[in-house]
Amino acid sequence: MTYGRRAITDRYARCVTHSVRRIGRTLAFVLPVVMVLSGTLAVTAVPWAASNSDSQLLAASARSVADADAAAKPPAPQDVLRDQLLQELRAKDPGVALTHLQRAVEGRPSLARHCMSIAKTLGKAAVEKYGPTRAHRFSRPVCDTSFASGVAQFS
Image (cartoon, rainbow, N blue to C red):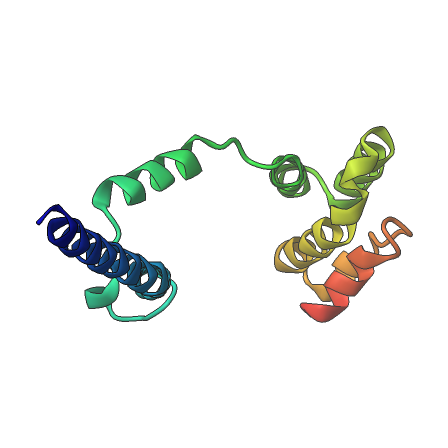
């Protein structure tokens, strides 16, 4: 009888081992598929994926944190400089603003890549204040004559 019990126990153990291995293989295949699909579905629920607000499933706290971070950032140096120069242009004349722009770019070379856009903005403001003919008289070779380009563009 001992021989019969052992044979039954061995068969049962092989059957259980086989079942456990089969379940493990199935999970090893199905789990990554489920995770990939759930990740794909999560990506479709971000605000830039669709224009309607029903598909935007982000938490309100995440949106408020992003808004707080954006509000806490100080303005960029080129924006500060642009605002200061526009105030100078309105208070005095475009020649003074252009001189200060040139000095600012010489003092901070990192502003050089923004020089053309600032000069064009000054040209637009000069056209608004003085008109195209008089604004063109203030042109100088600052930032590759972008001031004159701005005056011509907005005339």
